[in-house]
Image 1 (cartoon, rainbow, N blue to C red):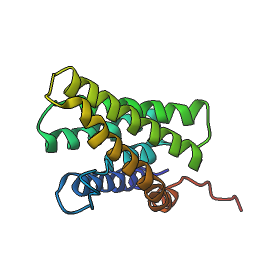
Image 2: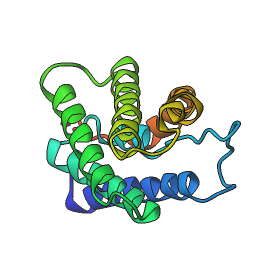
Image 3: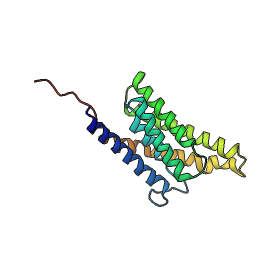
Image 4: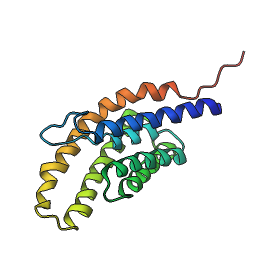
Length: 174
């Protein structure tokens, strides 16, 4: 793959991550269902990074996490570190163990989202001692997780053609 094509690929992926950040973190741009928000950055960064080199996948995850941290303004670094690690492990999974299929993408995106919701709730709600924090798992985090689960296949179907456009193919010899 030429340097120009690789640059276009990663610029496109970063623009998609920027769009997902805008949709996720700007009120009214993406529908909320009874207060449940869709965490678009988690599945988008996982889906885009799977099938890439681990270094590039981790950098895409770091970029997505930094965008989320900047827009949230609290707990700086948690999202960046978490999404970066999950993108790295998803890339490594596809590189060394599994194939880059719909099922693999869904499993990685769903596990990443589920673990994120539970860890965030545990570290920043329960351990911090927020009043009524126990119920936020059922009133906010699980509904957000389920909403993200439902949107993830649609997101994969949307991003698949973009990823396919940038796939490296050898030209046949004449």
